[in-house]
Image (cartoon, rainbow, N blue to C red; front, side):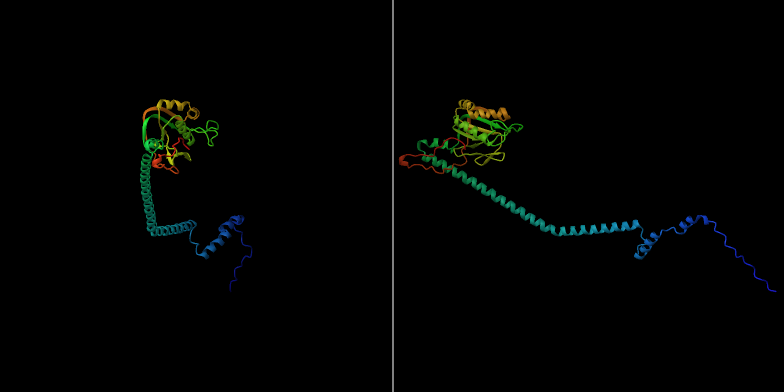
Length: 306
């Protein structure tokens, strides 16, 4: 007799032991956030799912370095190619400058030689046509060197230049400082002429009736030649009398005021013998010697400095 099948219980399944921990269970079952899961899926589609972030950063840095190295290499190669051309052009420019400089020096030497020759011819003409007064005319015109008793006046800038608004140069159009100006030297030279000087030179440059003392910036020019302080003025004349007369003159008092007010350094002394060179060149513009049978003449060598 067949056995009946065992009876099965239809009662409900017993509850899970962790049913009270549903939140924790959900976190365990779904540890990866949906957003991260989607991002991972996209990386898998792009083929980069297997590369960590640091690895990708290193690869990017390496690619950048490779690109920079390539640019530098190309630049160096280009510079290496163009370097001989640049060096050649530079050397050609240097050679051209050297050639022009040599040519200018040669022309300057030739000009000085011709200037000296012209001066010698002019001095000879003065002596020839001056008759009995030829030597005197040559002396007064600066055409010949002279020597004799005289004075030595040294004028130099102050140790420190101080600005000021008032002073003996306040109306001359430039500021009062401790620097010697061209107008100062003009007054000094004219004062010596008026005090009885027969010949005057500044720093070895002979002055004539046509000489000019001018300024170029802060530099003082005599006949367009720059002077460097200290300025040494030599004057031929009766040394003691010339020095005393100059000190008491208006120009001598002006120089003393510059010394007292702006510390411009001055030194005046009489000399037993001073020697003055001839003027570099003598330019006669309008004067002509008279005919030999009626006597001879020359340009008036009036004293003074423009």
